[in-house]
Amino acid sequence: MGFNCGIVGLPNVGKSTLFNALTATQAAEAANFPFCTKEPNVGRLGVPDPRLTRLAEIAKSAKVIPTQLEIVDIAGLIRGASKGEGLGNQFLANIREVDAIIHVLRCFEDGDVTHVEGDIDPLRDAETVDTELMLADLDSLERRLVATQKKAKTGDKEAKAQADVMEKAVAALQAGRPARTVLPDLSDEQREVFKALTLLTGKPVLYVANVEEASAAAGNALSERVARMAREQGAEAIVVSAAIEAEVAQLADPAEKQEFLETLGLEEPGLNKVIRAGYKLLDLITFFTVGPKEARAWTVRRGAKAPEAAGVIHTDFERGFIRAETIAYDDFVALGGEQGAKEAGKMRQEGKEYLVQDGDIFHFRFNV
Image 1 (cartoon, rainbow, N blue to C red):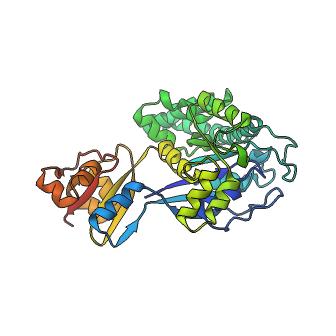
Image 2 (cartoon, rainbow, N blue to C red):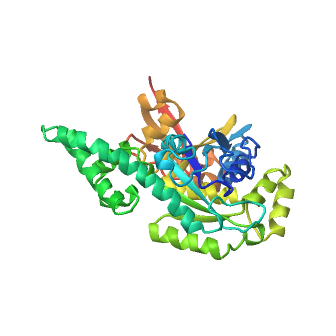
């Protein structure tokens, strides 16, 4: 299990360039005209994690397999998309399928790259996309709410629970706020109902301020405006230069990559920042399986119990779960591996109610 993020934004803001950089491919055509991306491009990439490399060294693993991140490059959106303008209907359908949204905002001036609105204003661009998504959600919810309310009046408890959540979301949207702003006021049960509504503005958002090369390290005045907006929304924002990331992705030698980044005052590729922010956005954690054949990283939601983690590897593991032999990452490293952890009493036998911790190393016992 990895996670699935859709890259969205207005045309010509750097979505496809960022996609190419993230996936280190040229699968997404990047060109200077609107609607260059018509069909969504999907890329999968390994998530870099220095802990996995260290575990493989200690266990002398023959193979190292990172967990996977899926990125979807979705067609650019324009005003009127909620009414089908441009590629609106296709855009809305594609975005419903992703778990989270990476919203790219143009924060650089370049006379050679036209902007669909004529000038550069990332907050206006964000509002354009958000408004279209909210209008689409409102139209969908208002139609569904009428039927749900009728069903609730017959005494249907499930319909009553759905109507209560839908009414809250409709009120937020009518007030010009994304549906996700109601989440803090919902109970755990209501959050499950909310998730099932698959609202466009119910998805978590990461704003990516795409800046020029000179501003990649510290950002610029435009990216600072994006950061303030994100803080006000309780969202995440990071600064990336998609152009730099595209160059870095073409360098095969790790030492050459690092030298190139250092000349620009950067400590790491922007890809790493996107991944960390994505994990935080979706509240995901990583656990490991380690042995002489392979060291492998796996992703699970925070709050998952041991059987769910086992099921990420194979459904049989979850169905026949007996226990999880567990070692914390720090103990595994400090004690030189599994045997040292066992001898020091640091291998624990955890049952079905154990909450998975980030960095746990598991060996699952099961019987099917």
